[in-house]
Image 1 (spheres, one colour):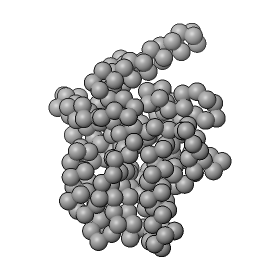
Image 2 (image 1 turned 180 degrees about the horizontal axis):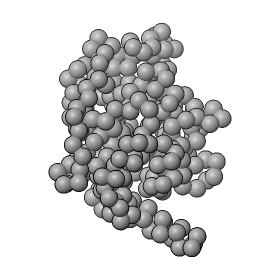
Image 3 (image 1 turned 90 degrees about the horizontal axis):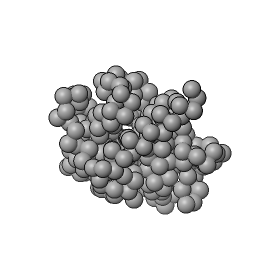
Image 4 (image 1 turned 45 degrees about the horizontal axis):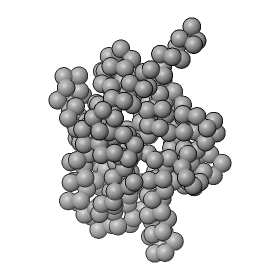
Length: 234
């Protein structure tokens, strides 16, 4: 029975990952196809929350476009943005503001360890846990461990580049609702479950202080219209 469950889970993870790749969404690839799922009859609509835009005008604000986790290296750029403003110019939040977009293959970064273990997010996003050298069964981007971010990268990523550490210095994380819907529908198809039930389960396991926005393509426009600069994270 144990072997059978393991085989089923591997097959499910492969279907989720291959489904994303089939529409051109993979590690480091553009994630525009995620927006197309919003019209599906199982998709969850969203009342806009624009609180994440507060305080942009007059500050050194930047929105970071992060479609792929890439071993936490993109989060390192965000950390450098905040840290260098502090070290070189003596400026910190709220005078310096960073906003990080979670969409495409970074949607799973919005959820806790329980969700990662249940839905196979490590394998689906090709994220390795440095401690086990295997696909992560926990959110290795959320919290630092031993002074580094435990998601594998070509270099050691300092612990103050973790999601929780960045939030502690004012970084805001926003999650694309269209992409969220895509993932719930792919998960439902792979597991034979109900997309709305999976959506509710994931919402119950979202990390603290993450704002869901209707569509990331609109969020980029709103942020820049409010005065934020833009940077693509590879």
